[in-house]
Length: 277
Image (cartoon, rainbow, N blue to C red; front, side):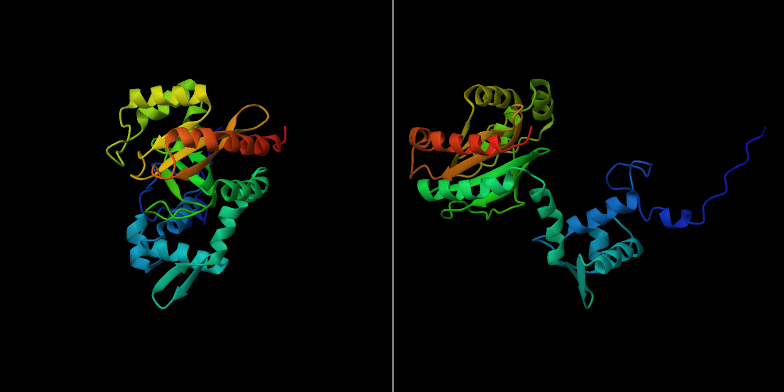
């Protein structure tokens, strides 16, 4: 029997792309392009673009003005974007998306008071982060005093290769995945002390895995030293990292290990013990 050609759905024109996909993916049963573009528009806002016009949003995301307009008006209708004249801006409702992730983490609420006690005892800032690609994302931060030139908070990102928490998280990966990731990384030098040779970084990560902690001194920023340990679940998988940060003139590397490492490891252990099997 001859197969009849399919009649295009009346809705097909609405799914037609406004511009070439910017993420390298094509529409399919497993990739909703309009949803992906909506996320791109949300991500286009930030410190460098707190407000945007239609034209600016289109330019920053690679969409047409018509495509950007449909997405912005949809986001406005959902309450994630507000319009003032020609300008659009994010609303606080966007925070729900990030805090939904935090609320889904079984250790997050336990970690907060423990890290507050740690910071108060050591008089040093403490943080928790998870790995996302080549970067770490801060999920908790308890500052003691400002020791970095950049402001960090929940959602802040830093390169994994030269941060103490990043090295702990990379070291916790299976060896083959760790090597693959490092070899594919763009190892940017943040200071003259940053390790940028992939073979040397892999050696450092192997050492971190054996010792169970990472100490990074002035590789991310001059005048900054940090010590990090892994948080593991009951199966021994590294799911997060904790650190304390200080300045070399406040504590030496030896003092940081001797005075802070035992307490940091104790907090990480208590957090890990709360995770469900």
